[in-house]
Length: 196
Image 1 (cartoon, helix red, strand yellow):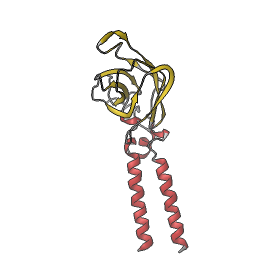
Image 2 (spheres, helix red, strand yellow):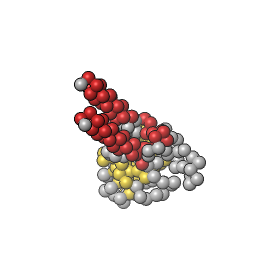
Image 3 (cartoon, helix red, strand yellow):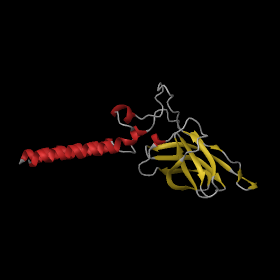
Image 4 (cartoon, rainbow, N blue to C red):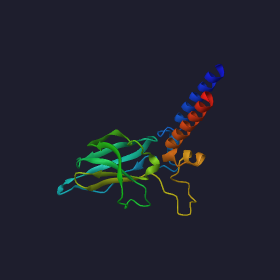
């Protein structure tokens, strides 16, 4: 009976270790080559449809961890309306197939604050290399920042890949799902051995 409890304790310890290692917010999921404090580049200079109202957009995009971005010294005046953080993986900022990466709205800021955005569940920094501020209300791109370069077609660059992906052979975005499935298989095997 003691052997069974020892095996159960080992399985629980392994499960905890795998879940911590597979944390989708882990710093190991930061893409290599991530440019700290990437400057926001404004796309609009005037409020859409109101040329007499100038827009002020500036700031620097950085990461907190694998699941959180921060815009430092952020200025966004006036709010264009229903603006959200979008992401796209592309060679150029001109790629239009961006998608929302955070459900939080980007709100007016006067340059004296840092605003943190938690990425939506299932998203991490390896999913995109450009972040875009997009007004869903006005259907206009407000600003963008390039976070890191994509590897070239020959694969000679290591930019855009994570330490987790390089070490495990598992794409960083799938590391958590892979670890969970592996742990479930291990627990099933141990349980079958214990109770057979």
